[in-house]
Image (tube, rainbow, N blue to C red):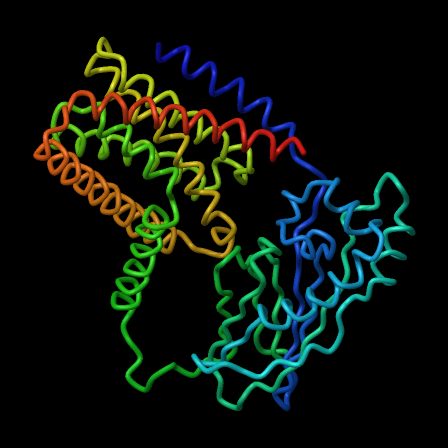
Length: 384
């Protein structure tokens, strides 16, 4: 059974890996001069941004409707300009700066650039949005946020000839740039305090990656719980699952495997469906129900790695160790909490007179159906 599962995962991986559309990452270049004037340019795929999709997820049909539909592009550009100005933000040592949007692509610019690229290569259309602001004297750190529709933004920030930082700012994550050697506080903290604080931050990221953001992850935990004979057994399976995803997260963090693509998303959904079926089957052995969380944990670990891998290139080994400790602890606590909450809900329903075995088997079937449906949906999105 396990061999068949692994074969299906490998087959799906091969199919989905061929489903990448043509797209390019956004990038940003910024310079702070000696007077504190900060100007930066964001180059991004403007059509995918206007339809509210990540560049790698923007369907060609929707892009064509925007670009060539009667009267569609100009209004979208106007609303996009407003959203762009509101979504980009810069904070100096925790205080927001007032940004001025100096320029934004016009509808004519977008159509002309697409036309010059030719019919076969009309997407993506990479154009610039330019901002300016004033950075207060003595600022130690800038935090920059970009619109989530841009995905990862490769950012190069320079202050005079003294400081230059290049990093990948992930979706929904701030880019933190140190532009001064001065400590943030006179009582600058020690390295171990800084490390502990960073582990705590990553712990929070791991927790929120499951609760509330990882609803598909929670669905997998529900399958693990529904097929377990006791709360203790469910928590043990959760621990085995954590060991599995820790292995792949470690492998990616150490650079032994390349960047994880979006093909991992339908794979994760497949594991939910298969886990539901196996939890439903009365003849599934305890050994199988321990192997399954471990094997599927390897798959989910690639999903976790995709969430943080864009930042790994700028981290040293010490920070990678902090990632593996903090993030995994946060994930495991969120898993254990979700299982305990499910156990409490089941106990309450049984107290109301409902049959426990029927509740568990119904949960398995519903979860399996949801997992397979999600897998097909994600495959369709990838192949558009």
